[in-house]
Length: 342
Image (tube, rainbow, N blue to C red):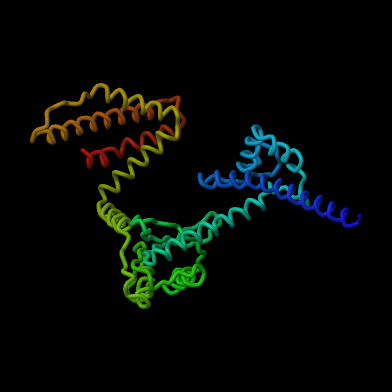
C-alpha cells in the first residue's frame, strides 16, 4: 500500500516537472525568436524601463506585447509574470536578454571558427574604432574559402586595445587568434590593414611581426584607404579646389539653416532648369564638346539665380540681421568658387 502511494507520488512529481519544463521551454522559444528578430536587424532591445504597457519599455518588450495580442499562451504569461519585479522568475528581463545574446554570439563564433579550421588557410583584416563609451576597440575579420569553393568574410570579435604600438596590436591579434579562439596563426596566408604606420611598417609594425613567425602571411595594403589618402592629398594640394568646396559648404549651411531660404533656393533652381533646355544631339565626335558647353550654360544660369537670391535676401528688411549679413558676405565669394567650375 505504501509502495503504491510512493509510486503514485513520484509519478505526480515527475509529471509536474515535465509540465513545468515544457511551460518554460515555450516561453523561451518566444523570447529567443524575438531576440533573434531584433538582433538580425540591428535594433536596440532595451528601453528606459522594463514595464509592460509602457511606451518606453523598448523593442524587446514591445515585440512581446505585439505577439501576445495573437498568442494566448504568451498573453497569459505576461499577465502572470510581466511586472512582478525582482525575485520572481519570468525570463522577460534585460538580464535574460543579455545572457541569450552572449550565448548566441558564442555559438555563432564557434561555428565560424569550426568553418575556418575546416578550410585551414585564412586571411585576416583588422582596424580600430571608438565605441560610444570612448573605448578603442580592434575589429578582427577573417576571410576563407568553404569546401564548396565559396569565399566568405566573417567578423570575429571586438577586442579592446589600450595602445596603438605595433607590438601591442600584434600581441592582441596573436592572443585572440591563438589563445582564445585556438586558430593557428601559421595557417594565415594574408593580412591587410589601413596605411597607419604602426600596422604595415616593415620593421616593427604588425605585418613585420606576423611575417617573422609566418613568412607566408603576405601583406596586402588596403586599396580603398590608399586611394582615399591619395585623393585627400591631391585635393589639399589645390587651393582653388579648397576655396570652391568651402564656398559650396558655406552656401549649403546658409540655405539649409532656414526653411524660407531653402524654399527660395529650390524655387530659383527649378525655374532655372525649366528655362535652360538640354540640347539633344546624336552621338558624334562633337557630342562631348556640345555637352560641355551645355553644362557650362546650366551652371552659369544656376550661379546667376543663386546670386540674385543672395542679393534679394541681403536687401530684404524682413530678414534678421544675421541672415542679411551672411547673404551679403556670400555674394563676395561666388567669383572665387564658380570661376573654378566654369
